[in-house]
Length: 410
Ligand SMILES: Nc1ncnc2c1ncn2[C@@H]1O[C@H](COP(=O)(O)OP(=O)(O)O)[C@@H](O)[C@H]1O
Ligand SMILES: [Mg+2]
Image (cartoon, protein in one colour):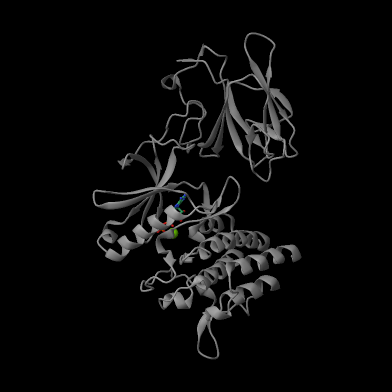
């Protein structure tokens, strides 16, 4: 294969899966500046990355072009895992900006008009067992399980009440990453008109939404009588998985995450007509690994206020507000679920383990006897999980402000 250009290819990858997220190609022999500031050639908006973090500079010594990397970042630059300040780059490898920061895979082509090995010659050496793409030639390393609607299914990532969620590859796509998520409705569900309606609703609602905390919608289609939804893949663990792996969460982190959820809910609740998500819970919130922002999933149960309120949707581990159980969801039902999620995050226990019967006979979350929840948070959770939605903190924006205050005081 002959190439005129480019000289340097940088690919932002999800680590360790090596899924490509974004690609930059540089054809001129100029320094490449990488950092958080917007005037860099490669802008990486990540908390651990400095405004001007590193520079990749051409060395014009001999016929063979060579490039060196120079660290300028406060948190350091790592070449293939080793901390470096200034070093010549090999042909391929990984540059990480700060330990735990974003990873750029680089490929330096010898020079214009020079042959590079075709992918078929690559031995795929040095790949980790769970790599999906080869770190050298980017060939797919895992078998394709099946093809649906032209998308190649690689693995199952979720099995929920309403359907199965797959990781899939779009060979024809023009997006930076060829990977996406396909959601399929269960066979037995396909017969139920209500489930079909929910699925159609998820597609219709996702199509109209535009927020960094909500996956982008790509397409929906029917194949062999089953409905599928294609959407943006969010890399990271959902919060149920996160607590499973890392244990319960610090108060600061829980507040920070729920503050972000409030911003997403404020967006949904401010739509005309307002949208109520109706299924806020840890498994439907992903912590995006790249920028550590929370993304809200699963719009199957979303409801426009003012439409028929008939269906009862909700999880059963104590995240669903009582009025929603009774078929009357309102925006404050989502805030109840945020309170229940906060409780789960800081205790590691499902909210229904805190159900108590009060003196007037009502049954609900009661944390007055739980000792290890700090005062500020206890008051917020108590206000959010009131049985009467009118007694709760009124809006997502108001709750967001309270959580922000809580962070300052804490
Ligand atoms: N866009 C996505 N990106 C990454 N993971 C996803 C995405 N959508 C779903 N998942 C994963 O699959 C699981 C199930 O998906 P979800 O949409 O919640 O369906 P359901 O709960 O109806 O089965 C989620 O908890 C999440 O871990
Ligand atoms: Mg779900």
